[in-house]
Length: 208
Image 1 (tube, rainbow, N blue to C red):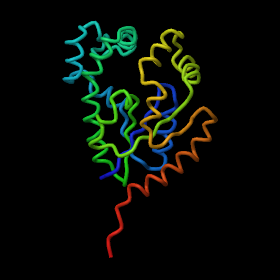
Image 2 (cartoon, one colour; image 1 turned 60 degrees about the horizontal axis):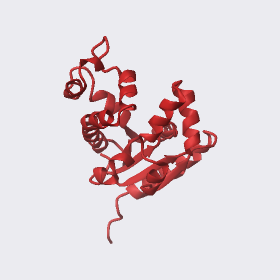
Image 3 (cartoon, rainbow, N blue to C red; image 1 turned 90 degrees about the vertical axis):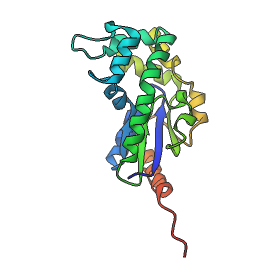
Image 4 (cartoon, rainbow, N blue to C red; image 1 turned 90 degrees about the horizontal axis):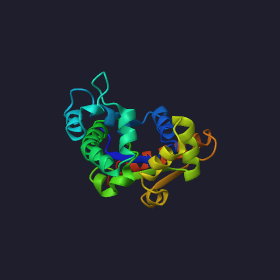
C-alpha cells in the first residue's frame, strides 16, 4: 500500500493528463478525480439522486445518466448552481480518491485533482503529502481549450475564471512543471520528479 501521496493539479487545459500519462508509464498508480467524479454520479448512485433532487430531472439524458454537456453549460453560467453541484460531488470524490491511494501498490501514489487549489490544501491535509502543479500562462489555456472543446471564447473564459487563479495554484505548489513547450520536455521533468518522489517515499533507514 502506498504511504506517500502526491496531489497533481493545474488549471483547465494545462496538460495534466499528459503528465499523468507519463507517471502511469513509470508504473505509478494514479487516482483520477475526473474518473471518480463520473463514477459518483453514475445511474443508480446516491450522488446522482442528490443531483436530480437539487436540479430537477431535466439534468438527465435519455439514458438516465447525467447530461454532462448541458450541466456544464448551466453551472458555468450560474455560480450558485456550480457551488451546489460541487457540494454534492466533491466530498464523494475526495473519499474515493483517498481510498484508492491508500490501496495503491508501490511506495507512492498520485491523486490527480484539477480543483485542488479551490478546495484548499487543508481539505486534503490528512492524506496528501506534496503538491505538484502543472503550470501554463492563461493565454495558453485559452488557446488549448478553444481548440480542444470547440467552444466559443465566452464559455472558455467562464471556465477558466471559475477556477483558482494561476497565482493561487503556484502558491500551494511544492513542485511545478511548466508545460508551455513541446510535449517531449515533459518526459525529463516527470522522470526527475519520479526519482525525487521515490526518495521522499522511502522509509527512513533503520537506526544502527
